[in-house]
Length: 133
Image (cartoon, rainbow, N blue to C red; front, side, top):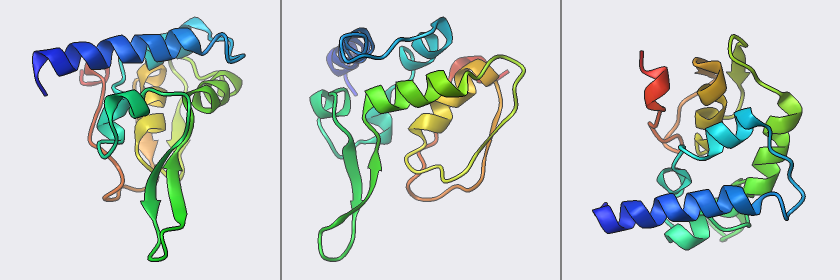
């Protein structure tokens, strides 16, 4: 990814988080701090940056008939689930059904350590620098 594309992704990611409030999401400092640095486009590489950071879910897999069978949830949905879970430093989290890995990456930010229940070709290998101690 070029410097220009990285800058564009950073700008879109910050706009995505800023735009969650008008959609009705109330972000705690923990959720905001997790969503700003985690690059969502890494987990949905088959779509444009604009789509990756847009308000809608992103279909990640379809069956042989073209029917969607897996998706990355909409950012507002993800933020709402993280708020309700209220994960804090020191908590231990077991992520069941890792999917794209985006939610696992977000969960690992405040927790510092997360154990996914499985890894698959759908899971992307991204971890925040903070966790790599």
